[in-house]
Length: 127
Image (cartoon, rainbow, N blue to C red; front, side):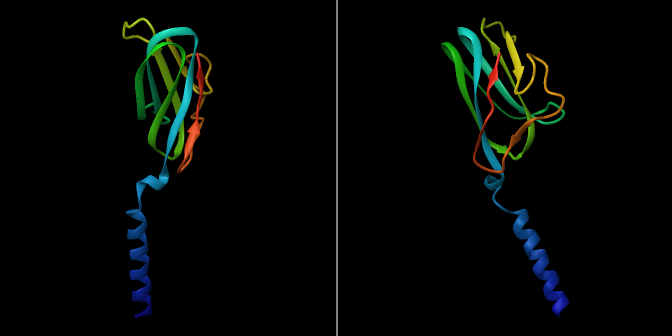
């Protein structure tokens, strides 16, 4: 009987954790994109996994500024690439592109943006 109760307790514990609130394992990714000069532009920022697939993203339009602050909420904890590009002439193509910790358009050799299980983490990108 004791073994049976221990087994049931273990199953209940597993079921309890598998249904835990996803919010406790997610964080907000923020940062600043910095351009060489003031411009009106559309920006895109992606949180990408190790195969460069986007798992979260944001975009927007900025008028006459050299910077923009971005924020992406509800990002699952893990290690990612943060990839951004800016279209400053409205042609639908990237005029500036970069990765957090990368060199110009080239990403780092492996994901380097560590997102914690909660809170806010900052990743700035300068073009």
